[in-house]
Amino acid sequence: MSQSDGPPTALRAAALGALLALSLTGAARAQGYTYEPLGPGVTAGRFVLHQSIAYEYTYDDNILFMSTDLPGSVPVASGVNVLRARFLADLPLRNSRFRLIYSPFYRSYTSDRFIPEDQINQVVGVEGIFHQSGRVTTAFRDDYANGTLSLQEQVARNGVPFGLGQYSVHNPRMDIGVRVGTRQGFSLIPGYSKSEFSGLVSGFGRIVDYGYTTQSLEGRFNYKHTEPTTIYLYSLIDRTTQTMSEAPDVSIRSNTVGLGLVQTADAAIVTQIAVGYETMQFEGGFGKDFSGVVGEANVLWHLGTLSRITLNVLRRPYASIYVGSNFYMATAGQLRWMRQLGRSFYLDAAAAIQENEFVPLDGVGRRERLVRLEVGTGHEFMKNLRGYVGFNVEQRESNVLQMSGGVGNDPFNYQLHRFIFRIEAGWM
Image 1 (cartoon, one colour):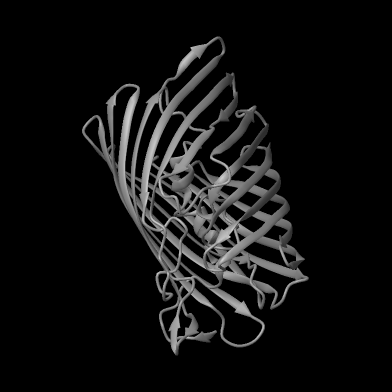
Image 2 (cartoon, rainbow, N blue to C red):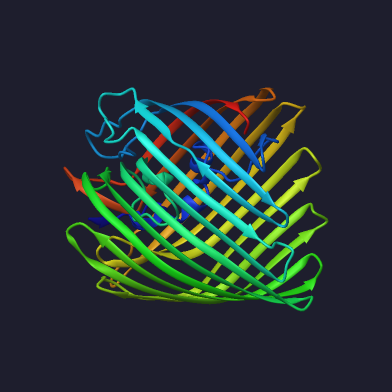
């Protein structure tokens, strides 16, 4: 491999991890995986039930995220049919709440060049919040997904930016909050995450097996400076084991301390900002350890009653699965705009960019960039029937070239264009 003078891009294939937390949350939305009901639902005793069924058709001209830069590379284009059921049960309990979601879906491809191992996928989740107005508040959430998924539909740590295969993830976590007086309080947030993937990764040209197991514990001290503004100090301990076929396990010890702020201005602008200092130490890996400043900011801005803008930015390290770099530094941002048109139409547009830099032990590191643009429109035909049409485009490139016949080509460069049609009926 040689370094080109081209533009920087997402550094090392693990670079796409953070982007999933930002621009790719739309994948979870497209699967109907959300705890928030969109309508009144159906009352059954003390429960409020939300049941729906949806059909989604996607045409994707590069379903395997194959490089468009390598000689002889022919990306696989295919239509994708998804039939999904969604069941959400909401149980209000005075100042508490319990929710259960189950969303199985069947996915098939129209191209005979790709046949998934499993066409039935499972998504299960539970969420509970107890004593919301009391001195002690307890919340928990547990998410589980299993099926044939793209790496772009994973959570924000995946190791490689593309591929289709067998994937499972389990993420239980809890938040225990204690109010002390009228202004002070503290929170304890334990968490656990386990993910496994086995499938074809185009940039590698082979089957890849890898996974992460993480245990974390976060503590916060909260201070309500004014009624709309809360400042908090936080400390996060994270212990991760990274596994990959044909490679030794890597143990990662992360520690972060920092300061955060949550502010609501006239219910029109909601801002959350967190800045901290993080250290990452690796055992069994190759490359440098990390220490430095990390940060994240999220802004929700209501422009009157018809428009809404959300802005998300972050800068933080993620573990890399590539030999020679223990981690990559992700810098990412997304801007999304939504506009209501009359009583039944809305427009939705978003732009996201991520640049990642893999930090090697010696020499010049890999740099990559991914850009994603999307636009869509939705329509509510009647109370329990709605549809959506959208289009998005992605492009990824890096500064690492593979020489072939005296010409440098990027094996991780890809472009894709995706058309989406979805119709959903029921009590959303």
